[in-house]
Image (cartoon, rainbow, N blue to C red; front, side, top):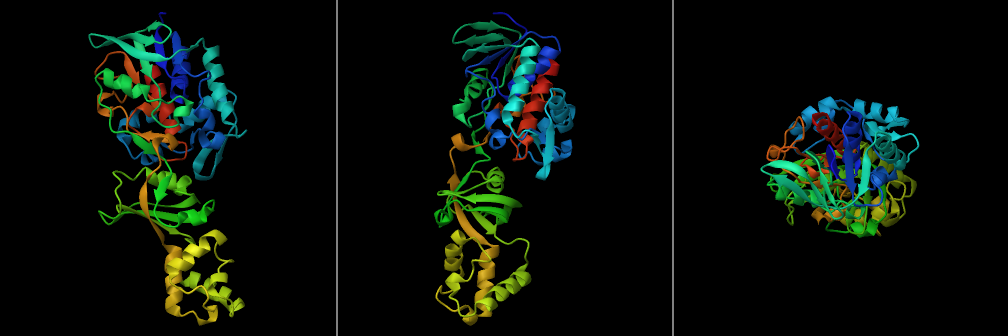
Length: 407
């Protein structure tokens, strides 16, 4: 089969690239080995699809810890505003929520994937269910793709296979193999935006969701905090998850025992003085109650046993007997409940892949390989990842647009 453009992978980046390429008049084939394109897109944002972040390009770059400068050109030419305009043009109403996160008004990710798929089909894109097995390259020039069921000849081939995260949605890492076979360097890959395993008593608070807490992550080798923010987190049987923790994971590398420590501030809105006043007020209402039964108005029930243990105060001590020094210890624990990091959860549980095709070998303007003429890499397969908030999808849209404009 002969065509102008072959795109390997029918995910967010692949389908956006297909639409933009077809709109420019190219004949496009998308090779997708799953029965339906955009499976991963359908589960993003807990099934709501955080399409992008309603911010400027500099803010997007500030939320990309790995290789943001490489993405500047692409992000400047397809901004979050362009992303929103694109989907609104396809008939999708959008809304902006806390943190400038953009979602479809319907809160249904399938509206986003459906709009992409329909736009591609309306533009004449052929979505072929086949598994790409290898690239066809001759004398440093792309010639096409060998599939399990056939061969697809084109002088423009785009690898949009995703990374290693969520393999059940089709991200098998094939694109990284294709890159290596084409002579590209692939940096070490792992999970980013992934839950974190911790030592300590986290399992005692399993299921507890905190909405307005603080989290800092200390690198004990340097003595500096590598992450500090406020937001939402969730205690699990293995440690912690939730938006704060996922973002923190992007800053943690080469984890060894004792390297990183999590510090959770359960009451970031109260300084020590105000928290002490609050504790004294609560204690004054139940002066003869045991300390172990006195914190129910201040803290969630499931975390109280951990707080009591860490404070060093006897749980059977009457609250009217607790000293100023003991209150200071309690306040310290509430403001800094610490856990040593054991490791990150497997990449299969990660939202995005850290690592990928070395961007030094890719043109930042066109996404074309510097090693093989006509070969392009877009989206998660590249060594560039961002924090939560719609920034990773914005990378997908922008790199896809850059490649399509270069065909």
